[in-house]
Image 1 (cartoon, rainbow, N blue to C red):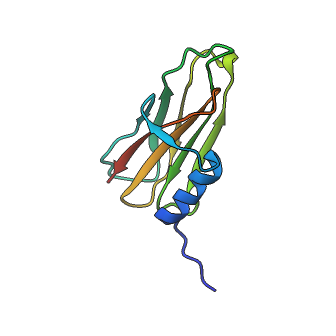
Image 2: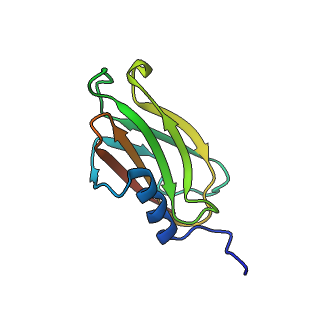
Length: 120
């Protein structure tokens, strides 16, 4: 069986469900900063910031970035704790064509928050 070399929106949803355990994902608190229009998808700057005081009782546990069309739907996962100081990271990613990129943060209270950007 030949498998396509790109994830699908259904595979992205499955990867998100695996990360969240099927929990509800709320919009807000997460800011995904990625250019909506890029000339070359080989190296795209991506920054994720989460609104959190990063205290022992209220902090970000993890941030994951997902996409619809790359070979794997889970682009990157970052683990954090209250000693991180702030919930922010930057990286460069590769994107194959027009697709939606989604960032999801897992908070210490078990809630999940997200942001998404359509990248052309």
